[in-house]
Length: 135
Image (cartoon, rainbow, N blue to C red; front, side):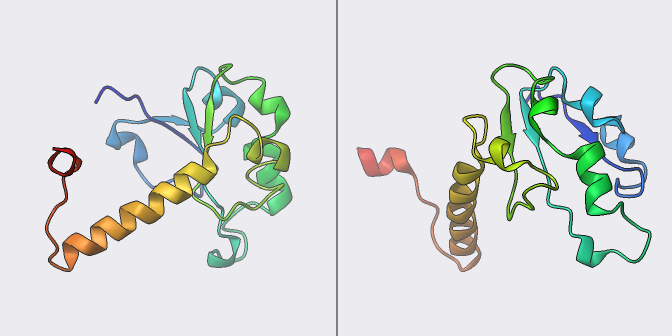
């Protein structure tokens, strides 16, 4: 589809050999966000990690959090995504989550429809075509 994908995060949280997936790997978030059309943040699930496996919330926010300073490094019309729930002040500053750059609410709404469609098909339902419905 022509997309160029980059990943960024603490080395301890990135999958081993992730570069073999054809993605560009960054460990510096400020460099990673430059020239991106979309920045997809992820929720850090600190409760799933053992002691010392992940940075503290403060460290994560300082090095990998999206805030106004980092947003200023992005393209003017960058879209900010996050699957939710957002740890406000950790992955994403509140003012960015609520800004015109954020498409998080659309993403969450569309995710509900996608899951409904997948469950429908898995339960043996027939695929639906909008084109057939319109005609």
